Length: 59
Image 1 (cartoon, rainbow, N blue to C red):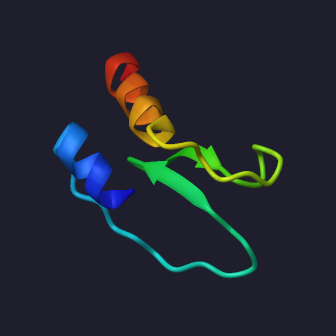
Image 2: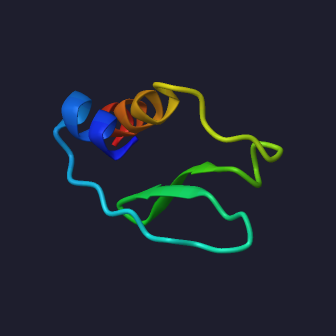
């Protein structure tokens, strides 16, 4: 996923290990995706890039 984000958006990605099944994606201190909030599912391929692209457009 980090490679996909870097290739598609040219962004540096920091992967931080979590525990207890936590899988959150944050950009600029804001939550972009949460496995918990999505009902326990991981993002689909391309979903994170789409969400990050949307964030960049909307600021």
